[in-house]
Image 1 (tube, rainbow, N blue to C red):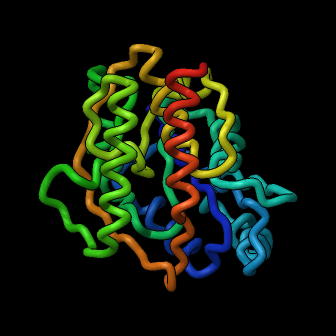
Image 2: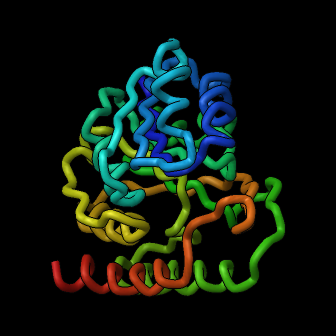
Length: 231
């Protein structure tokens, strides 16, 4: 089965080469790498055009002419995917592509339709960072679970894996980080078989380029209500 790896990026000139290499070197052999540059302003766009796009390291590069947000980048990437399975991969090296096999196994073995990679299951390495981020993540996951009746431990995880026909069958409306609660609400309504797999997490600080903030947490709460109750 072919794996489409969607990598949304915005101002990741320091890590874009490394993440592409890591994805290519990951143990899953049959991959399609799709980069979506969300109108970067730090040199990422030029690096993609002048260096990376001219090689065989990636299969598709999509450029946004205006910065729209992670959800919008994922919408473009998912639409372009042709693999049997679609996985979301951030460009910032917080998540390890060497864990693809364990993430896709429940789908390949026909046990799951969707897999969440949980940073809070298992004994893998985790960088120690922000207490309030961890608390906020737990609150958002709990709020989401209350509406979806799922027992997820990490709704906000980057690593979400889908059978392609499932994710391409959904309309993604959120342009920023509201994608996470939106997509969780929508797949819960489909009655999909959802699994969680423990993953490692190498988080970064704001000085290192982390972008999500408290406003995104407020928006996530709104999205939990919007896509579970109003839709």
